[in-house]
Image (cartoon, rainbow, N blue to C red):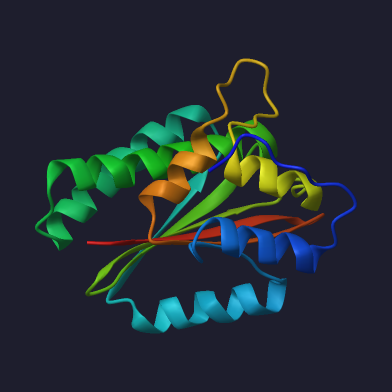
Length: 176
């Protein structure tokens, strides 16, 4: 992934196409309706699910610990893979606190892997910034290295995002 991304006055269709091509189809930017249909499919395929609220920093630590227990209970998993899942969770949950103050995380266990849905009611992400966030070390925070989302894309099998003025929803899938 390149740090040199040129985006100016791109429409949403162009941004979607750029993200799909640049990530080999791993990252999709969806509209609300398509995103929610995808979530419904996940819910139907899940053998188990859990819902957690994120209201403050300490919630991330507590949920991370519960998530670790759930994964170990549900799958025989290598430590590195478990670490990667927990890292993805921590990165995206931290973004909820940084940018939206609070949100909800839903975890869906399927036969093949784990889906984690992050929902917040923040201001959403500017469509023109999404390629920078997804494909480079961009950060909106001065004290951040900005690699979080790029790392998530590398560690996940798929990421689906929907964002608007009502908030941002991100569904990640990691095959186990």
